[in-house]
Image (tube, rainbow, N blue to C red; front, side, top):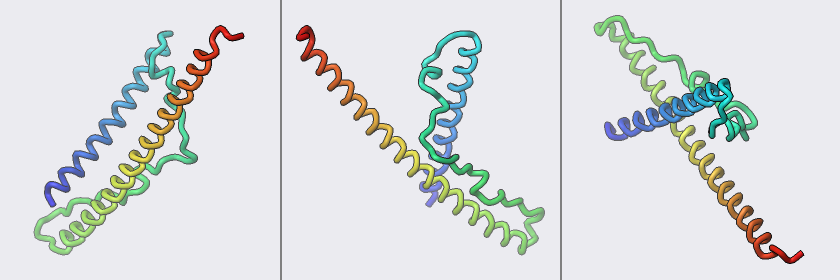
Length: 135
């Protein structure tokens, strides 16, 4: 059980780091653009999306973070807090699992698009190489 929780925490940290790296890349691209320098990030349309609607933010999906009881001797407050923490962790795990599944599906579809684009380019190049000088 402890190993599973550690894995969940590590996964959450990886997701946060990925978001932070994306934000840093966008910030770097914005700085480069303002100085008249073209960057690779700028050339890849960072604001492009295929999503029909905004992805649900964790702040909108998860319940409020349960406040810690004021006293260890208040058993009623402790019992309610433990239940609230359990409910929060269950909701967080469901969100994390869903986000992970969504990311995996997105990566799979992106990879298929890359593969198909590479096939199209290869066919395009082969066509013109085959017919080069035959006009």
